[in-house]
Length: 51
Image (spheres, rainbow, N blue to C red):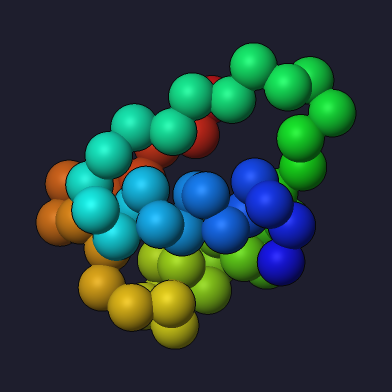
């Protein structure tokens, strides 16, 4: 996992916001799918929002 992907997983599990101002940051769709399926632990019940 990239540094940003690790940060996203950690933030989703804590229920925190992750603000990325790095235009070169990439999060693979595969990781987002795994995250939503619970393969990286439970995520906050409010879900995950990316923009």
